[in-house]
Image 1 (cartoon, rainbow, N blue to C red):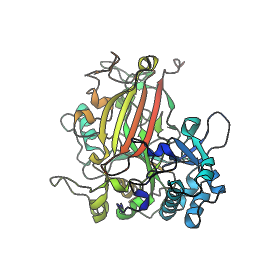
Image 2 (image 1 turned 60 degrees about the vertical axis):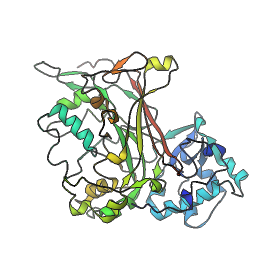
Image 3 (image 1 turned 180 degrees about the vertical axis):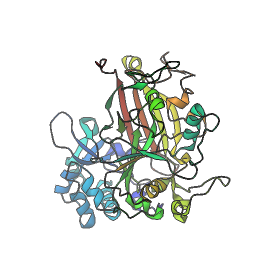
Image 4 (image 1 turned 90 degrees about the vertical axis):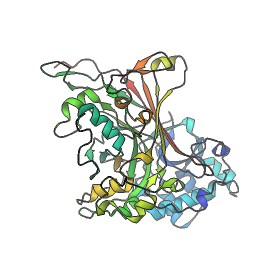
Length: 443
């Protein structure tokens, strides 16, 4: 939970990649997020890259040029693979050394800029893959505002269950249906109970929703039976991405009791391609607080480091582009904006609680933050909240209305950190498009 800054965070740094210096750029030299990519349409192997301006720096090609030595060179050599896995296992010191080496290479004054430019590829010519093979996916429920709003729809007499303020709630999700930004999401079939019906039926979901979340990618795991202390939890976090946990609300409502989400969630989850390291986010640390009237965390979920800098000032936005908007070349419409600082439980607390029973996390494991909603109605991270469970349709600029997602809708998540006197650190976007359901099952 370090807020310590070094030369890589200097807001005055500029890159010889001119697009990285433009106002509002998501990927200035102070960011340097990582991804797995290849040139689109050429059948090349995927490899690791780093974003700089509107380009991707091919780290395998960069390694052949031997731009720096020491631990940074060891970390760079680990990037010559179609996955970030090997780099992740090297640990935080290696991640930091690679960041410093890349920062020096990409600065305006770098002596080998012309030579290093041969390793650049325009992002517009790239396609992306999952950054690592994700073996395990756990989705948390860290926004008290989302939990309360959803609880009010289903349990108006007790919106927030009594355990919420004591324990970070989560469920184990389906890793096999995870996809990268640009994912096409087929409207799922499932068992639903129509209002007033005497028995359920199998049907395509008509209450398809998005969830605006942060994804936490584990770098170094822990041994089975060895919990991770909360003060050391972020040493195990490689970085963050955007995450859309698509949800079939009608399927979910019928199936979730007593064991929780299943088919209403497992059909698709979309993440952004760029993994933003915690080191890049250091200038945007905030103290983590808990209202004095609420229960304070049990000791295994609390420490001075958490209180000093355990939260992040991370802006989040969700936008919608309907098929009609796309046909008219109209810009997507922003539906909601919120901030991760409203989260009731922190990154470190998610990791510490996940392992307190001895559960072993592994490199590449993904933790979802759960839907991020703020205290104001306009900060809701799902349509379920924005439309009050479908009772109040949203009016779109195109003249359309939405209670839940329609076929052809494209959902775009964005995230960024921004503060006066600091470079903007962007996450790019995580987008996905809803496709019509498969033809009726012959059952």
